[in-house]
Length: 346
Ligand code: PHE
Image (tube, rainbow, N blue to C red; front, side):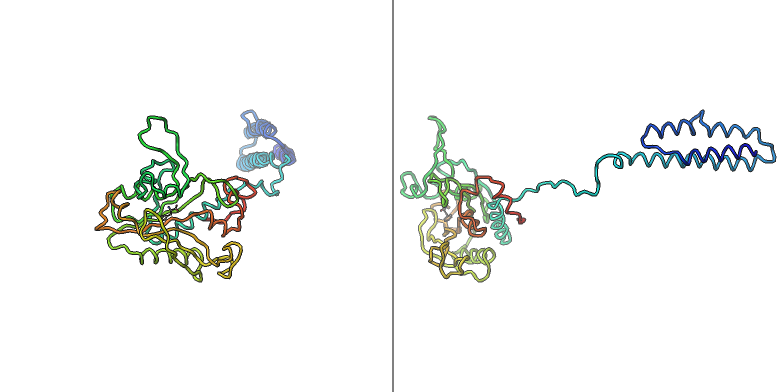
């Protein structure tokens, strides 16, 4: 019994002072001590040499020893599973690599802002094609062939081959979507139509051959010019603030009658006159009017029963004013130094 106790003491010392730095050493430890031919098993076998009256005590001591060895094994296992981090060069306290976050394009920010204001008034979003036929872009909008108003917008035509049944073009405005929505034949209609449009214009700091518009369309029984004004008043106050003043100037569009252009008091100088508003104190932001009866008729809507209004606004100009951008070409150059400056959600 005395021998046994001494042996256990020696074993315990050996186990205590053992340390491992990798999995292989831990496995060696397991085989040496806890394996089927290991020392723990071996010393357990010595029970048979212990006199009967001491067996109880010896059994307890041996069991404790076995647990001691097993605990050490667990400890070694835990320790080496962390050693990869402890012994390698990785410093877990260093800040991680930054994942670059994208930002929204300023045109998207502006467009989303416009959309969300009209959505609050119950307008749904509708989109139309950028490659359009002559009828939807012009004829149905009260601009038959040879109508002089077609020259108001320099058009890019698509070469669709000699056998093409119709003329294809890049839409010059989002008003084509008005026609497409009306043709669906579901009334009333209350939609806004954001999208890209194309005009054959010389590219400069102030104009580009493509840009963005948001069209608005509302058709129901008894829709009046007062409804149009009220809707646009709401939009302007939400967009530019409660203090902004609004004025309508009579204008001309073939597809609306009467037609108007809407100005807001310059939100840069507050109406005093600056470079942005060319010293007038006003900035033009959209064209609008009551939908011409011919347009309703062309799209299969009875103008005796229904009336409606439409408006169309550019997106680039208000975005340039809002963000202080002085060259329209920046929007399409995709220079990240420019783009990453716009981080606000929207
Ligand atoms: N389509 C016109 C333009 O591009 C704007 C507009 C839309 C005017 C709807 C009146 C009504 O200039």
